[in-house]
Length: 124
Image 1: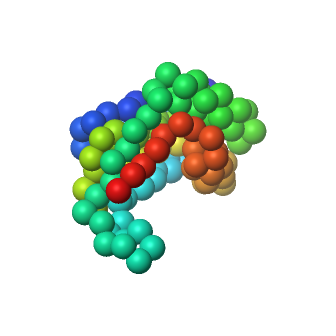
Image 2: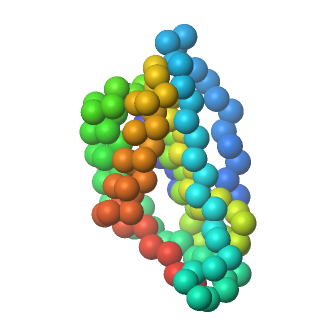
């Protein structure tokens, strides 16, 4: 499985897509946007920090394992660092798979694992 992980302080621009095979039948994309409210508090944005080397290693492990479970072909993962204003994406994930079910399951599981133990922190 091809895994591409990127951390950036820049606005996330959806990357051009290259299909590695004509057997790709599903492209599943997710953008996590910064919301205006955190509980009862109005926000202007969030600040993201990462322990990049460890985050990359943990993510590679999770994504590789999920690729084996769900049979996906490739994943692109982009996470913003620093200040991200309300309404902008802090996270972008693209999954390539033969069928939609595998891609959708991979995406949901990858976000759950990201929140579980990948050292990326947000603060107001």
